[in-house]
Length: 134
Image (cartoon, rainbow, N blue to C red; front, side, top):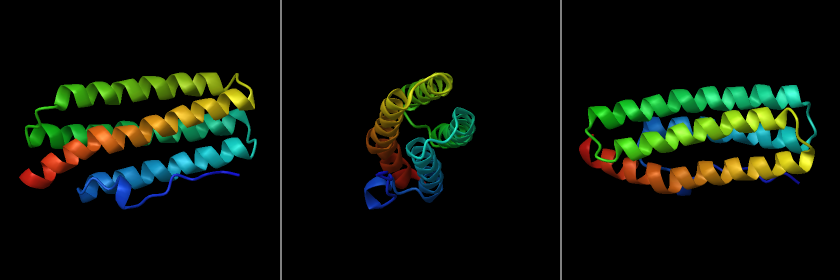
């Protein structure tokens, strides 16, 4: 059975434009998770990962613009986490094209953990800061 990431208050950072982006990322992640569980082709999984990566890149540039505009002190560390996620997701895409289902499931769990932990920690700090200055 597939366990979706559920969008809700716990994932809200309190800045509508960032929350809207995160909702899109969660939706694409859930599509990917379902596709893995349903045994979709590696090519289809790669296409979903491309969509997730492209959405994440756009979202990260969006967050980074807000950080620059509002002079966020933690920008360098935050940008480094963004780069780490992009590198991990691209590596994951390559591995999915060659991996068995058990390995893919582990990689999807890693991606889910990374995404939620980034929102819970790093993005919550940013949201709290932006809520005060915007």
